[in-house]
Length: 184
Image (cartoon, rainbow, N blue to C red; front, side):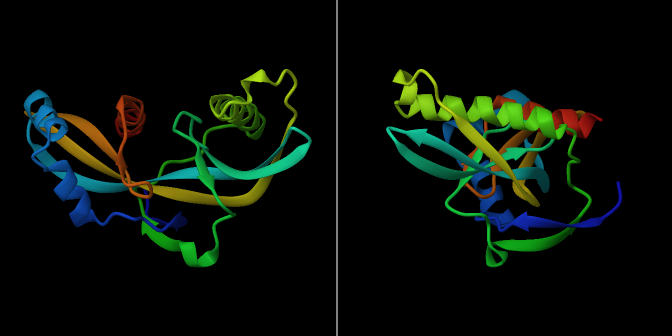
């Protein structure tokens, strides 16, 4: 894969901070080391996300929120922004560690609709029978940064993932997502 420039949201975790978390003495880090072998390497990776404005009505009031859906499979957690990311919140990164969008726009909107309805229902809007959701694609493709930690022995590597914006370790779904990309 060749190096190319992408527009990415600025990370809130440096590589040194990510390494410190992956090597921490906590239970989770010890479990990964025992189960998968020692930490071998940490690398950044960038996932393309499509940004959408979502409007919905609750008790007679229109609400607008900004969500981003990963454009690869739509499998990662939604991102929610208080506003469309501004230029000072983004940076241009030259990398070959970027995933390519695979979702079709219509499939992405339907997947987003389902995920947004789930978010709204979890917030207590489950009593509403007919919730009208309007989705508008905002023409910006941005990439969100992740830190990937590779653990292993004897050529078998497992991937642990940190969301570099939200500063959290992701679960098995994200690990599988990136391992699939790396195996392709």
